[in-house]
Length: 256
Image (cartoon, rainbow, N blue to C red; front, side, top):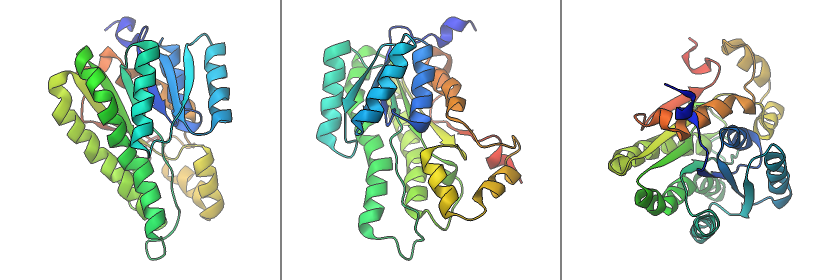
C-alpha cells in the first residue's frame, strides 16, 4: 500500500463539533491529508478560531453555524456544503455532550438533551449526506462512540446509552449502505484530555489516578491521537473496513 491510499486531496469533510477537542484533532488530521474541512458547530468564536488555524496551515476550511439537534439545520448544512464545494465525501459525526448525574436523579429533559445531541443527530446527519454520497458512488461516515459504549458508569446513564446506541447505529448504516460503496465506522475514545473530561476530573474524585493506573500507555489521550485514525477511516485505505468500532484509548479497554 502506498501513501496515496491515505491521500484526501480534493475531498470534502464535514466535521460536526469540529471546533475543539477530539473533533478539531480529527479535522487537523484530515486537513493535513488534503481534505477541505467544513466545521459544523454552534459557537462562532471557537469555530472561526479553528478555521483560522486550519487555513493558516494551508488547508481549505470554512465554518457553517449548525445546531445538530435541528434536522432543518443539518439539511441547510448539507445544501450549503454542496453549493460551495460540489461534493461531500466524508462525514465525521462528532458533536456530543453529557450530563453527569446518576440514573435516579437525571431528568427526562436532561436525558433527551444527551440522546438528541449524541445519537439522534448522528442519524440525522448521516441521512442528510447519504444522497450526495450515493450519487457520487462513494462515501465515508465516521461516528464517535466512547469506552462507555463498552462499560457502564454510575454517573453517566444518558451518555452511556447514547454512545452504545451510536455503535449499533453505525453497524446499521454499514449494513444498509455498503452496496452504495459507503463505509461507516465508529471510533471509541478512551480518557482524552478535553474540556469535557477536565470537568469530569473535577466532579469525580480520584478519576485522574484511576485512569493512569488502568491505562497501559500510562497517560491520558490527546486530541492529536485522533488524526491518524480519522485519516485512515476517511481514505481509500479503509475501503473494506465497515461496521467496525475501534478503541483509541491507550489500551484502557483491554486492561484486566
